[in-house]
Each structure stands twice: as C-alpha cells, then as structure tokens.
Length: 393
Image (tube, rainbow, N blue to C red; front, side, top):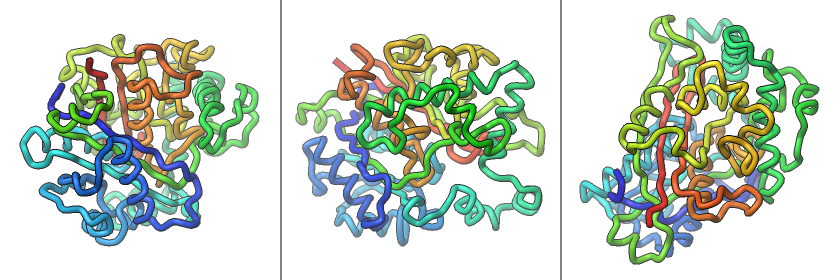
C-alpha cells in the first residue's frame, strides 16, 4: 500500500453534545473541516466513503446517498461498508485501493453520530439492531448487554492470568493524563487508581470509570492520489499495511480473549513489513479498559497474559511508558461519537505523525503509528480492522 495514496486532511468535530445540529450537518461540518485541512474543496472530491445506515446512527436518511446529495458531491466512486466502530479504519484501505485502481483521485471518509443528544445508550442502539438478528432469540432473553459481555472478558482474563482491577485502572489513568491536555475532552480531569476503584460497579469487575463516554460529534479524513497529494504541501502520510476480519462465536467454540485483532494485526504487520516493536504510537479502541488490554496482547505488543504488567505504572502514558496509546484521551476520556470510536482513533494517529498532537503528549519524531478498531463487541460477534501509517520523507 505504501505510496499508493496519502492522507492529506483530517478533522475531529469539537462538539460532544450536538443539541443544535442535525446528523447531516455534522457530516457536512467534518467534511468541510477535513477538506480545509487538506487545502481542497468539495468540488475536488470524486470518491465518498462512509458506514452504512443503521437505524440512523451514522449516515442519515437513505444512507450515503443522502449525504452525497446534502454535500452536493459529483462522484465517480461510492463505498458504504458497515462494520460499526472498525468501519472507518477499514475504509481507509478501501479508499487507497480505489485510488490506485483509478476509480477516484480524492477520497472523503466521514463519520457522525449524536446518541448523547438523542439520549440513546449503546444498549438501546444494539436492541434496535438486534431484534431481527438470527442469534437474538437465543441471547436477548438472557440479558446479553454491551457492558456485561466486556465484564465477562475481564473476569476471564483475571481468572486465566491473575489480572487485577488495579491494572485495568491504569488504562483509565493513562487516558486521563492525556485528556487533561485536550480542551475538547469530555473528561479532562486526571484520575487516580483509587478514583477508578471507588467508582460504582457496572458489570463485574468493570466499574463506571472502566467504561467509555457517550458523546456526539464525528470526524473525517481525506485521501488523495500521489499526484494530488504532493501538490498540497501537507505532510505525506501513507497507509502502509492493513488487515480486516470478522470474529464470531463459531457455534460456541471460541476463545473469549482472542479477538479478530489477532488476524487483522498479523495481516497489517505482514503487509507493512514491520513488527510491533517498530510502532511508536498506537490508537487502540477503548470502549472499556479491558478492550485495550486484550488488543495489546492480540496485536503482539506483549505476550498473552502480560497485558496487566504492560499497562501498569503508566505503561501507556506518552513520555513515560513503553508505548504511547490514545494521546487525545481516547474513548475513555475524550470522545466516542455515535458509540463508534474508529474515526477519532485514526485522526489522533494523523496528528501524532504530523507532530500536531499537544506538546505534552507528542511522541518525538513519530514516523510509524498503528490504528486498531473493533466493531461490535468482544465476547460476541465483532469486526477488527488494523491500519499501519507512516510519515513519508
């Protein structure tokens, strides 16, 4: 993938509570923000990429067609791929392939959501989507919910590897240390291990501060053909390796601690011809603290069962730990628009590679970054997308 296309624009919406904006307006504002960042206009866009319309949780109306009309785009290529929180990371690879195949020259990817303004929880969202699913009759009567599925993952990790609640709490503490430098973060206050452990229990062993925020907002990125990108005088960030898969329950024969990240990460590293030790910054999906722990192991940053030790004592804090992770505060403290965190993970990786992250969290001379997203839920069916980005030149 290296050099086939470049990320030239990125923009994260500053709102976290969009009571004064429609879903379509959020899409328009992030699109214009990313294009302005790139030095391009709507008229330059000939490829549009977004997730599918799922009960109006991302693309409004008739999904992507409504957004295309709302923005007045004149397209040669359209791609709508629904993979929940991992969709936007996966769509970067789709955009690179489309540009390389000559289907478009400037690709726009947008995401938006407003569950906070609409007062809808992740549980309500999933119930809207799950009623017609073939597994619904077997799972919903038993109270399968987002939080308790992740609670099962955490309990299993504790049982198999001796992981502690204190170790999980370090992931939240690291996120808060980063969020204090983000003026848009929903939870900018630095918290302690004691703060996390004293917060109310949600789904044993996960407490309130082990859970991500619910927020409105969104973001967008723009990719361009090399001929276009090299005229824009923007940092040249090229996708170098990507992987994607769907992990499901396999009729009950599955490992609850083995996410799709094992496959998607291996594919991305093989394609990029680098290894986990080469990565200087990582944006990892953090719907819950346990999500980060499992991904660190599944992606190869540490051995299975060693995630607790890896994150302890500030292991994820930029400038202090072994690996800087989610330096904007992540979903645990900053933003999780539409209950889908993949886009903002991508944007923070772009900031790090450009050297545009806050000086207190910027990784020095950051050249290689990894972005990983989960769509759906661990301990259930989910998609995993991994992307490795490089600052060229």
